[in-house]
Length: 153
Image 1 (tube, rainbow, N blue to C red):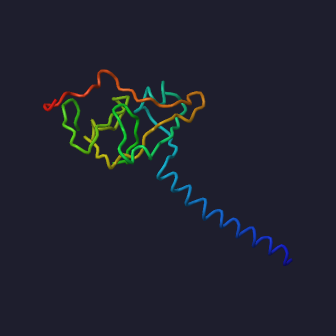
Image 2: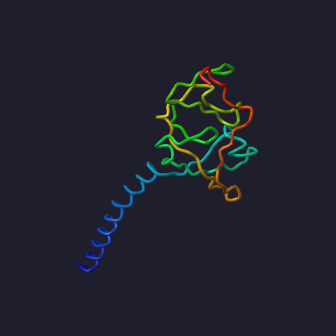
Image 3: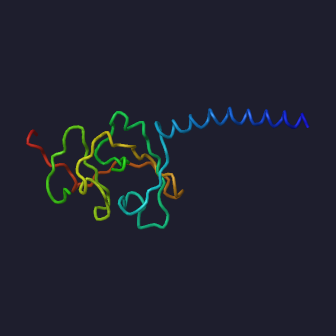
């Protein structure tokens, strides 16, 4: 009887050590380096969830790249959840203009205006699921979406 209690005590102690080391490391990694997210809806079609597919794309979100605001026009980004249609808007310094690929189904800067760089959550870098769509995401900017020259240019 004493031997079985000793084995259980060792097992429990080993489990706790592993748990209390692994969980904080995993949480820190997912919060600071990268995480995985499922893309739902039609707002990013055709880049993500093409053709109204029944399965949602799963993407890798790189938190590290947005720490220094290393994003460019055409990058696919994730924002922290938080009416400028058909008019020109000046985007203030320290802000970005974010638009979904499928304009009729996107809740984006056309609805809520310029976004503070502080709300930038991550940069989507790869499609991880479904397997037949596994690929690196490239920055693509449609030609009709070029910026309006400012008065300073």
